[in-house]
Image 1 (cartoon, rainbow, N blue to C red):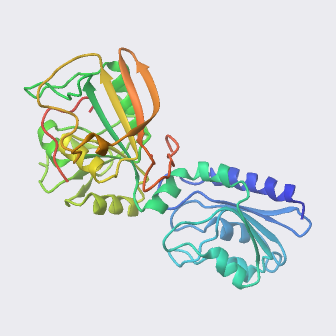
Image 2 (spheres, rainbow, N blue to C red):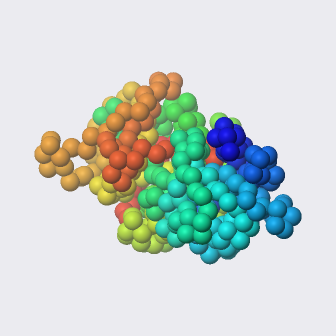
Length: 365
């Protein structure tokens, strides 16, 4: 079959995948079935957890036996596990598909291996068609599948000398309206927003994404409380339009793993010095969003605590991605040199992404 037809079918499969839900545990996947002559005979896409996967959706639109000898073009390697639905690899084999073409290998711990199963059954398998384009589209899901945790953005707003509040704990407002508006845009683009229970007790943040007029934006991030202390029932976070997730653990790794299992792909962390430093020290920050105001405050309330850097040779270098001016303020976007988990630089596409924090560090909440 002309490989141009295969590439065209893959582009169509990618178009179909966009119709699936942008957030959640499962990836957005599209599938196109081509006859032996290269004609499109069926299309399908995944509509969310518990619904047929793209391959099964496409096959369901064909009369029994009509897929014999056909080619299935799918954006992600067919799965090879039993979850709420059966393995797509087995469905393709049972339908008599002769060839499977996919773009990206499935890195899922339990779902990978579909290509090997198909080859064992005598199906011709081709991988990597339009790989870069599909990887870009699936960046957020692929990151969580590969690292078993969400993509973490750590945000703080501070003076030029790195202080997030005055000596008495007051911090509203260090930055101006344009910077605060961008914070709310970043919140909206994230699946969830996390603070320590100390922050919830001291600052009573709403953890919502709001417009300049105070109206709630859509969609809202899921609020996450991390820490061992209880938050009173009358706290603002309990009035959030989405039910908060409470993680009573001291292990950041365990907390992030649980969030990934709940379908959280991008996490926006607004933390005080202790919790922020814990994320940095553990190597769990993938991107920094640092808002700097042209002011000097001094005093003890710094954005970060001890990072375990004993000498200049141990400093934690960052790669500058962008520097933007927002009114009188700056937004510095940076990533750890080398990227997450040993070298990956995957960034979730915008929109559809334990310790406690000292009081008074709620700039932008």
